[in-house]
Image (tube, rainbow, N blue to C red):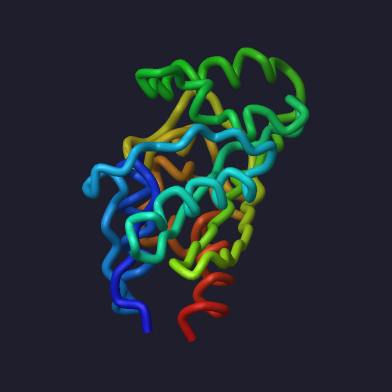
Amino acid sequence: MIRRLVIASHNAGKVREIAELLEPHGIEGVSAAALGLPEPEETGDTFLANAELKARAAVRSGLPALADDSGLAVAALGGAPGIYSARWAGPDRDFSRAMAAVHERVGDRPRAAAFVAALALAWPDGHVESFEGRVEGRLVWPPRGERGFGYDPVFVPDGHDETFGEMDPEAKSRISHRARAFAKLAAACFP
């Protein structure tokens, strides 16, 4: 049974969410940043490809490595920002700018969107297991809420009135794209 793994991310919000998902399984997550592991360049053309790339880079630590690649997919923008969601925030990770850019580009078109998360668990023996989760919803403007991170303040999941940025973190963690992907991973890897 696995007791410790690398969370292959330098994003504090993602590390926190993933660590919380691991906790009930008795697994300690240590961030790639805490281990001094560099962030690999994301050259994949899908969320799954990028998650696998990051997991394979972090497994070099000798511990199993869990990586996430996730983002916002807006139907009116052909799925953008998609795998480039973080890049829309620029090098300083200014998601206020990214949210404004999405709002401006969508304009008066329908505001259907989804959050997508791919998780890849790389093992020291070289094999990788990958899982994807998705939550459908709609965009709102202006941003609402101080909780969460990234695009959370402009995304309302279907069946709810609050944005991910307004939602109690426990409520969000039960329905999020990352939680859905993690449920699949846990069923396969942490029975």
